Structures are given as C-alpha cells and as structure tokens.
Image (cartoon, rainbow, N blue to C red):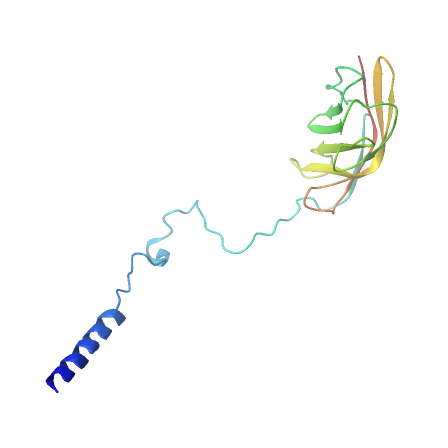
Length: 176
C-alpha cells in the first residue's frame, strides 16, 4: 500500500511540474509593446492582406504630338519603337519588328499586327503613374526618311485597375 501512495504522490508531483510551465516561455510570441513601446517603429508588421487603390479618380484624355512634343528615339525608319516626350509626359510605342505601313491594334503584347503603348505622367492624372494601352489602333505611315504613327482612340488603364481610363489620340513621328 505504501508503494501505491508513493506512486500516486509521484504522479501528482509530475503533473503539477509539467502543468505549471513558465508563462514567459522564451519561444512563444508575446507582444509586450504596451509597457515598453515598439522597439522597431519603422519596421511594421502587417497581418492580413493589403488592398491597393488607384491614385487616379477620373477619366481623362489628351493629344500627343501637338506643339512642344519631341520624338527622341527615332534613329532610323526601321525602328521597333517610337517615343514622344513633352515636359514629364512620356508615350512609348513598341513593335515586334520594324513598323511598316499599315494598321496595328493596341495590345498588351507585341505581335505581327499589334503593338504596345505605355504612357507615363499623363496630364490631369497623378504623377508617377504608368498607363498601358488596352484598346484602339495605330496607323503607321513610313517612307525612306520618316515614320509617323497616328493614334486612333487608344484607351489606357493602369496595370491593376480598369478604371479610370485615359484616352490618347494624336500622332508620334520622326524623320532621319
């Protein structure tokens, strides 16, 4: 009987020992910022997901190629890209190969009958935002000394947002 009480006593002691674990377990995550303050105030930890919002709020339009625009990238008429700049505004057309006479669709990928348009710092929109052509067309006219791209109802959106939209028309061109 004595061994029986010794065994029960040993079980009780072991049970109390393992159930009263140290509350300040060094491996546990426990924020204590309430009394000490965040030791890394500029290194915030975010839980959950972040919702991105567009900085733009309204549809706008503009004409490229009017007074004050320059076309710095036309080295030759067999170029695979055209560029127009005015102040901080930058409009770039990219083709799969040298653009030839004809109509190209604005697309998200370059191809035989398509090209990509990118616009940066669009007028009447927040600065520093890229806009990508989603629709419209470009009519290319080229000869031995010049190339011209007429933009027809080119609709641009931001990469992550389909609204608002920017409508671009006008022309990009250059000569040797």
